[in-house]
Length: 138
Image (cartoon, rainbow, N blue to C red):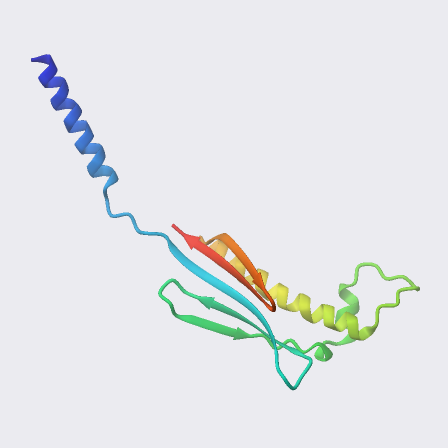
């Protein structure tokens, strides 16, 4: 009799655990961010953009107006930590670097925004001119 009670209790516990764990768990969702640095055929200037592909397949592209000669020299100099009298970095190179960092700043802002919303970075791939970030939310 005790074996039957033990088997019945074990069956009830197993069924209880199974019903507790078999609730419809939402499958993980995936989102992708793509940073693209395409260059146009008629200009040396890159045309950077950030594209976010949502879990439902919709996407939005944010074109970033990064034209290096539009940045004032004072803004660029304010970001340089240490510059010596023998520094031979040209203004053109500094503007290019500043414009590239402006793009990276927008990229990291988007990653931080999505991270705060519960998205977790799981993979990064890089190709010529493009970086893709794959994020997941459970």
